[in-house]
Image (cartoon, rainbow, N blue to C red; front, side, top):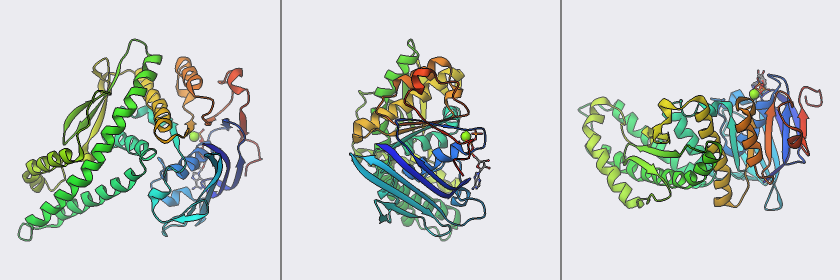
Length: 375
Ligand SMILES: Nc1ncnc2c1ncn2[C@@H]1O[C@H](COP(=O)(O)OP(=O)(O)OP(=O)(O)O)[C@@H](O)[C@H]1O
Ligand SMILES: [Mg+2]
């Protein structure tokens, strides 16, 4: 995939922005607070309908305005494709793919494939389980688009169950209804669990190679900490259980926790409580990895994502690197830039161009947003 043209109206600090891309290597250069991240954020938003920074749509709209418009032309299968988002909260956002309105988010998400790598990702390992699940969920969305709807469905059922637990009084408690919530959770949750395990099993093979290339004597492993199936060591030899088998165990686990859930009025087990652990030479990186080791893991995961998207969808994703180069040492920086296949369009934001060697700067398209060419 290749980006051709990005138009933003009232998105973040851009009243009106029009960028035409004509290279696979794009640098967005500007001093702090000029709007570099905002450009990358708009591209990532067009791909995932997700912003890591904004909690509400309003935050994405130029202050004082009520409507924002994002348009992107890109090349897909040698054809021109178009994406458009109109934000007009509190109304539902309008989504268009090739001028055709899409009512379901899942029909829009990951039309454009991206891998986003920003400074905050470097904290992934030391962050919360929620951060780690979010990374996983967004990465899966880029490959299995049905995942988005399934996750939404699961979250809705989970919320209904929690509301029911919180609102029901002992006298009005309906055990049958509670069972219905649980069995719905088991089915929806098993689908999520299955796809998470499948994805991790697939990504680890690439991540291990990338990791070895940077840190020769260290072995990376991933363990999925499931509240349903226990800790699962993911490698290529792992045999995925069938959905029916997972549903059965899911139901058993919910049954085991039933009393405790009623006592605490919380939903205690399920994919919303799971976590991921990364091990280096069998040592849990959450607790023991140095900053450099953590960076190597995250970098390996991001590059593995690029490879896996290509393997599974046939598309080269767009790689968005927001300020991360400055955070990586020379070894990791050059590994990153040299490993990126030249067919992968890469958009890098940076405060200056000094850190790039001459070889990289060849054929690069630079947008200097300190200049007034941009409004
Ligand atoms: N909704 C909005 N309306 C107008 N301006 C906004 C809005 N949201 C953010 N901004 C402004 O956009 C500016 C640029 O933000 P951005 O994060 O893109 O900068 P940056 O170039 O990436 O800076 P840094 O180098 O520090 O990361 C900020 O000063 C911020 O105040
Ligand atoms: Mg920034």
